[in-house]
Length: 260
Image 1 (cartoon, rainbow, N blue to C red):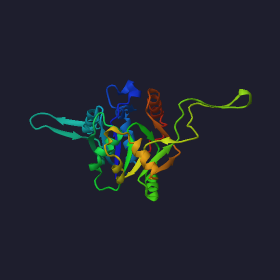
Image 2: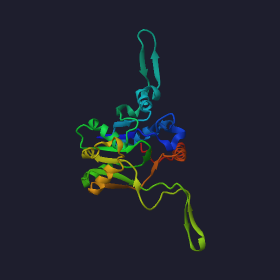
Image 3: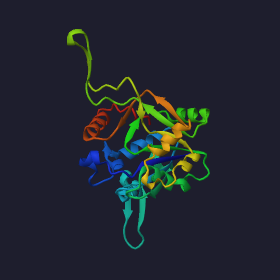
Image 4: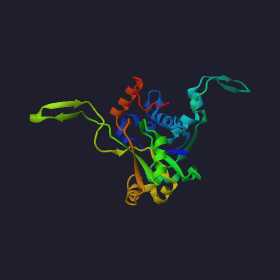
């Protein structure tokens, strides 16, 4: 079962990091956030990836083309009969990564429609964004998707609080203060979708459409959009503040999305 990751956006709200590289290549620790997302899926047994490239997609291609060189110790024999020997191995050796150019200005519906041929005859596929991590149990989400039989499952998450939350009592006395809590009420689109292949029928003329608008709104009206509720950790990397937060969590060894 394929894992499709949207990697083509320009990440304008994180301009400090994305001016010279695509957003999925912004690092957490010494690896790009894209690698962290792929590890979440791979740890649960899903290792066939289709990356929808766009803005500065050549940087993502370079990363995977040189992956062995950058992650292993290597000995080079020079001369007229050169040879290469890699001394170490990585857990990623059994990954399959399809790098698909879906256009620099293409919107998300178009990016998804352009990779239909790489899904093959699979009935369903995973779909997510290249800028958010979480301790999502994608195997349980898949079970939920198969059980309800609808065309699209969205992982519905509680949005992380961007500001301190206060609880105010009588007379204006603050009785409780939580620094940047996860919001307790309401849910938002957290990505980590499971889509039936029929979803491609909703993506006609998709280059100028956001998947999250007309296609998903139509699916919702038809009763074909379901929510898998995730109550654990989820965090996007939309701003420099969130970039700093995720890197601090990783450096401190308290990264809940690290399930491998």
